[in-house]
Amino acid sequence: MIIATLAFYLFAIVAVISALNVIFQRNPVHSVLWLILTFFNAAGLFVLLGAEFVAMILVVVYVGAVAVLFLFVVMMLDINITVIREGFLKYLWVGATIGVILLAELAVVFGGWVMSPDAQKLRTAPAPAPDALSNTEALGSLLYTNYAYLFQAAGLVLLVAMVGAIVLTLRRRPGVRKQNIHDQVNRRVQDTLEIVKVETGKGVS
Amino acid sequence: MAEFVDGYLLPGLWIVAKILMLAVPLLILMAFLTLAERRIIGAMQMRKGPNVVGPFGLLQPFADAVKLLFKETVVPTGSSPVVFFLAPMITFTLALLAWAVIPLDVGMVLSNVNVGILYLFAISSLGVYGIVMAGWASNSRYAFLGAMRSAAQMVSYEVSIGFVMISVLLTAGTLNLSELVEAQRGMWFFLPHFPMFIVFFISVLAETNRHPFDLPEAESELVAGFMTEYSSMAFALFFLGEYMNMIMMSGIVSILFLGGWLAPHEMLPGLSVLAPIFTWIPGVLWFFFKICFCLFVFIWVRATFPRYRYDQLMRLGWKVFLPLSLIWLVLTAGFLVYTGKLAQ
Image (cartoon, rainbow over all chains, first blue to last red; front, top):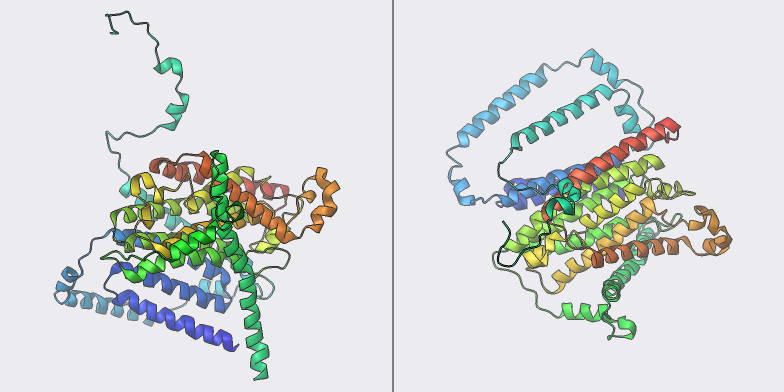
C-alpha cells in the first residue's frame, strides 16, 4: 500500500507543478509540452484509482490527438512575447472584471443547485459490482444502457462541431490542379495517343 | 527490515531483471536489424552490402555505433537545447515502453493489463512527439517542414489503425493481449480480416515513417527532414528509434493478426504431420519468427516502392483507408451479431 501512496504523491505533485508551468512558461510550445506532462500524470492518477480504461483513453485522446493539434498550431504561431507583455496591465481590468462576473455567476448557480428527481433515479440505478467486471465492460454496459441517450447526444454534439469546422474551412478554389486517380486509371492509349506518319517537309497540323 | 527486503526489494529487483531480460535481446535484435536491412537491400539490388567487418559483416553495427559515439555533438544556435535532446530520447524510449504489455508466450509478459491493446495504441500514437519536438527545437526550416509533414501523416494514419484494432478486438472480445492471442487458436485473424491486415500493415509503414512513406525525412527535398540538425549519439538515437519502432510495430502486427506465439499447425491441417516439431519449438521462437517475417516485409517494401507524394499520402489515408476500415468495422460487427458469435 505504501508504494501506491508514494506513487499518488509523485503523480499529484508532478501534475500540479507541470500544470503551474503551463501557465508560467513564456514560450507557448513549452507550455504545451508541460500540458502533455500534466495529462500523463492525470492518467497515472486514474490508474491508481483502478480506472485503467479512462487512463488509457485520456492518453489516446488528449495526449495522442488533442495535444498534437495544439502543438501543431502553436508551433506555427510567430509570437513575440514582449509585445504580448506590453498590453498586460492595460487589459488587466477587463480580464479581472470578466473573472469576477463568472465567479459570481457560478456562485449563484451552485447556490441554488437542486438535484432533479430523474438524475437521482439514474444515480441509484443498479451499477455492476466492481469485482465481477473489468472496468471497460462496466463502463460499456452503463453507457449503452442507462445513459444511451445522453451518450448519443454527446456524439451528436461532436458531430455538429465537426461539420461546423469543415463547413467553415472548406472552400472551393478555382484553378487548382488536382490529381484525379479515376481518370488516370481509365485512360486508354487510343484516347490520348495518335500515331501519325509525317511526310518530310510537311509537319502535322 | 526483513519485511522491506522480502516485500519490496526482492520483487523490485526481480522486475528490473525481467525488464533487462526483455530489453537487452531487443537492443541486440535492433543492432542486427540495421545490418540485416543493408544486407537484404544489397541482395535485392544485386550488390553485396557491408560484409567486411567481422564474419559476414556481423560486427558492422558495433563499428557504426563506435563511429557515432566519437562524433561531435552539434547544437544549432537559436535552438531550444532541452527539447532538442529530449526529442530523440522520447522517440527511443517510447518504442521500448510498448514491450511492457506485449506477451511473448503463455504468461510470459511483464504486465498483463486488461487494456493492453489500448495501451499499445496510446504508446504508438505518442511517437509523433519525438519528431515534432525535434523539428521545432532544431530551429531549421528543413527540420520544421519534416516535422509538420510527420505530424499530419501520423495523425492521419492513426485513425485507420484505431479502426482496424477495433475490428480485431470485436472479433476477439477482449482488450487483453494474451487473451487476444488465445482467441486466435485455430484461425489467425489475418485470414478473416485479410483486407484489414493489408490496411494495417500499410498504415504501420506510414506510422513508423518507413518507405514508401518516409516523407518526414525525404532527402531529395528536405535534406534529412527532422533529423537534419542532429549528429553523433542524438542522431543515433533517432536512427535506432526508427528500428525499435519497426520491431515494436512488427510485434503488434504479430499479436493482432499472426497469432502471437501460436504455432501454425493448428490453423493449417496439412501441417499436422509436423505437429510434434512445431509444438517442440517454444512459443517465444514462433513469435520471433513472425516478427522477423514482418521486418523482412518492411525491408522488402523499402527496396521495392518509390516514395509517395504528400497529397497522395493524405488521399490514401483519409479517402481510402479511413472509409474502408470504417465499413469493415460495421461489417464485422454486423456479421458477429448476425451469427451470434459476438463475445458477451
